[in-house]
Amino acid sequence: MGRACAIFMMVAVAFVSVSARAQTGGNSCVVRELADLPISYDPVSRPIVTGTLDGQNQRLIVDTGGVVSMLAWKTVRDLRLNEHYLNNKTIYMLNGSSAKYAVNVGDVRFGALAIPRVSFVVMPSDWTFTDADGTIAPDLFSKYDVEFDFGANRMRLFSPDGCSGPAPDIRSRFVALPLWSDSHALMHVRANVDGTDMDAVIDTGSGQSILRQDEADSVLGRPVKESELVHAGTGTSNGWDFYRAPFHALRFGHVLVKEPDLFIMSDKLAQVRYFGTLKHYRHVEAVEPPQLIIGMSVLRKLRLYISYKTNTLYAAAATT
Image (cartoon, rainbow, N blue to C red):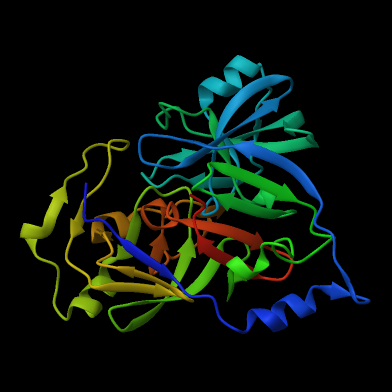
């Protein structure tokens, strides 16, 4: 499904100074691992980890591009959780349906890490998963440093009070990329597609990398063609239209992807209330879709370490 991507990682000499800043009083800082979780993948390559919610194992998609952590309607029923209204707030899904309820889970555990009383939004009944019971988003895990080693199929959570970044013994394998977090803790980086600079979101919750249509038109120097339309979504939950066109190179930081396979978000999709849009009383808080979503079609080939505390994304080639 699409062309293979070639990814080349370049480790800069600047890591000497980065490593030096990780020293305290001449001694190496200590990385304190809180959880080491195996990753599996759903049919579109989104990473799934298993956690326990009130003592029951649940399979949860790890969604760095999600606004809130969510549970499927069936999961809420199976756990016999009590729903409550979102207090005059509505969260719209990507297909335009809306989530209006939330639940509180008293005990959430990932390996040895216990997190008391976590709030999850309840997905609309028409939003279902085949391989997962819900999602976890930065509202839950941005309190920690997070590592995704997709080659080894592992996700690790670390205390942010120790080193800022990977452990000193493996730090030289990574390059450091500046990122900024918005009000929803989404990770933004600067990216470039065929010479055009743009804002991008790192999104493990998206199986594909997605370019907004107005940006695609600008990069291509022409409007997308009807012949490039490859899928027509129907109904409220069966999908949407998107386009495919050839691109030569995607860069972010020191990461280069040749001939990236980018899905182009159609105007129809852009006009849908974007996932995470909040409605307070009668006022809708506009959330514009990002110019570029860097999804698992690219990220699966990388090893990522996210330091939310220092707004830094460390990247390396995936462990083999």
